[in-house]
Image (tube, rainbow, N blue to C red):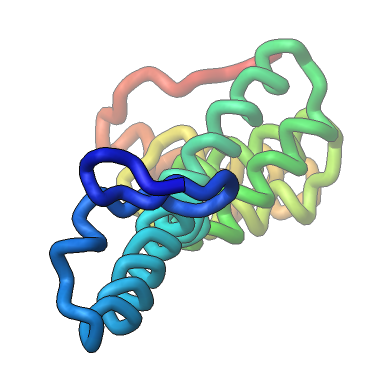
Length: 164
């Protein structure tokens, strides 16, 4: 059904008000380019979300894990922190908090691995050293524990976060 401005209106199709201004030999090329651009622009937000940075996704898991830690839901917290470190293998906070969750779950070997990785990412972290020292004490390796604790006192580190 033609309208007064040369626009063709057909239900279910795009309205191209300038279609009548194009020469006949360019109409089909223009329509394909227009449709390709339209489809790209309508799909691109989803594509961009799919390629969102891994570190942003890791931060979401870190936040969820921290909330689970506060609620003492340690298994769920460990799961979230595992996801965070998978998405961002350089996440000190991810490994440190994963170590805390494993510590609370009494998964000592896994806690030791997580704290060790946290220390490799941040060698100055006193909390990771402290928990590693406690883990060595539990394992009966007092010499390693004493070495870590002495290193902490020699540095005059900031107060260590301890749980009872």
